[in-house]
Image (tube, rainbow, N blue to C red; front, side, top):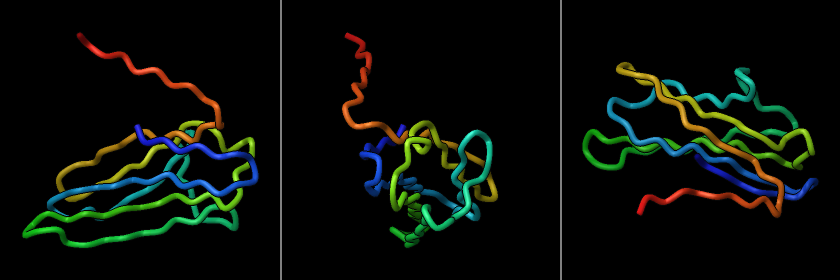
Length: 105
């Protein structure tokens, strides 16, 4: 899961980095099952390039111009090409959040 942290009033960016073949035809950001559209406070930026041969890399960034308290929480990025759809979770965190990850020994 991709994560970013920011203080209220500061900028923040959540990124979705996709490698695929065939190329991705659709990339969308979601929150609470609703598609996120660019607004005055949210900017969606795209970078696309062919890495090598048939492998394509595409990056979408969801940029918060000024984080509001209501912006914290879970998001998702969904990508699709002619063969399949995939989704990855993203999270905008409050500063000071402590995360744990279990490690198998």
